Length: 329
Image (cartoon, rainbow, N blue to C red):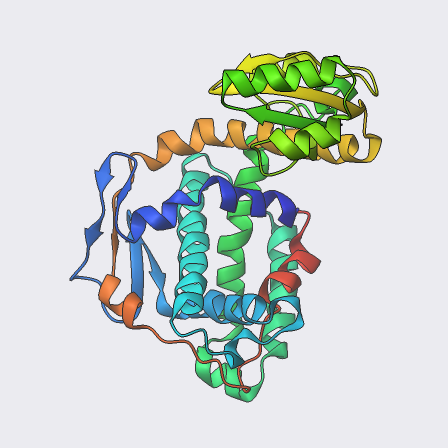
């Protein structure tokens, strides 16, 4: 079920950006001088504490900081871009969770006793995984971790409640992914030259190497990834068939079909289509709700907050343990 909630992060990526300097819906964000140095932001009456933010921040710094098996914290990149990225991811996730929990409360979505029990088990496991040094740094109790997991779980349950009626049936044709070679030129004279060469039987790849103005020649495409005029032609070609010149947008296209049905990629694309439907179903409710929220951020405190990337702070299992115990919420 984490897959679904992760997709929400993509859907709502604007929320943290809005909080860090722009707007939520049609409302300006207030840079607060009222929040104290233990409070990161407030949305309506709900405050995100520094302790909760630090749990997310610390886990994300260790997840992203050791991506691909490389400890990025041991490399000098000449700036603080990695720190800014980790803090942006953290703010994004937390603002989503708080906003979604407020929406859940307004819709009377609540956690069950069984779900709270699973959360308690997760909190116990994560808390036990912390070293003494990590516990001192995070300043959390097991009860704190349980509270943070409840916030996260309620957001996940809300998302699922808003998307569980989405039709998950996707036809092969709707999801179909094809393999093509393509030529695009912006100039009509060049397009005529290409058409003449292809009509006389010149090799498509050779002509493409000489004329194509796109970044790639051979590629795979699904529906809605090509201009409408091009898609209509491309998805009706048989294997080995080449289109005539197609005028679309700011130029001219030529398509050769290599495989009109890539079975493996088509199956994978079905999941993408379902996720898109879920996003649309979620957005319909969420965006309207968010537009009415008031919020403020302790920007100076957040900007000045530093990360502890020493060897003693290695915890990175907060989300993994949640998924293990609460993934079906």
